[in-house]
Image: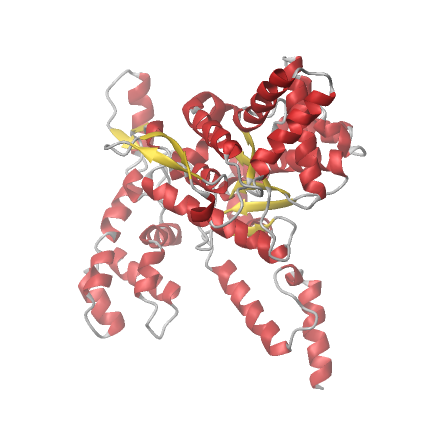
Length: 479
């Protein structure tokens, strides 16, 4: 009987696709059940939008309750971790009490049978957050004020879940000073994410440190996180930001190999067009970091090795020694600074539609618009060097989590990088999603083993039903 039950449970796990989350074979049933419960609880804790945003319409009912609870953040549920009730559910109940007009201190006493100044202090923000959300109609007023040329109060551009002071809406949003990128806080997070990325690679590749990573970055992400991904890239290269007395970034410096404690990681960078246009100083900072990393003389430096391979390839094509050295450096920096020409979601989708049977054809536009023949040769040599690194199992691609599985950019950029590498090597590369909502800093390899976004959104009937109530905008979100 127990054997039949064991077989039935494992078969149901596979049938429902949960075997992508946990290992099913050669694991005791009790261990399998515990890991499944852990993964299901993790999915359940994800914030899932209740439909799309409607201009000038405030959240109400359960949507307002869930939004305010989410704005209190994980730090609030951590305060409730010692209680008998589930922290997430208890947080929702306490917020509901305060939204219903109950003073925070009374809500805490009524639900916990004691006083707790920390929980009470956190709940005092609930009316403030709710009032900010209720001010949504001013978005329409602000639009007409702008059209009439009237003054509009300024406000920071951000997600209220990340920065509650982004409310109230309807203000003239401002960005940030790119000279601060990465901020001190963003740099600390970026270092953690770089370490998490390396640890994830080592876990999947018998302890080997990656030698090459390709990043896809977007202007919207830097506006939200103030340079977390950029700091991640700097740390992978084995460099760090240099700041003046006001905290502005003035350059980068090399981290000595002994202090770094691991080999450097070579970086290939592709950016959105808006990122390229809006943040040339940040791109120049990354290029300078790559240049510094390439000069570090250690034997296990893949950045220096890749530049040397590009120089050797140019020498083999008949370039003069000095010219080959200059062009190999220029080609290496080009790989890090410029948006890959023509690798854009719309172009990838069009090419995929026309040439679905030949993935190799999709990488060719990447080289078609490089104007300088010398730079083209240097860039091609760099691509071949990266391909050789991939044949050793070390080329991987990383993208920030906000765009993964929500917009076609994920397929256009990460997928385009994968197809370009596959056209040269014949193999797929590992695709990672860097996710700041996850304390570990990484949402896993994008091969279906950890499909968090798919399960919490596209496979989530509640999310689909909420989006269906929003007509065209909800349908657009599906695309």
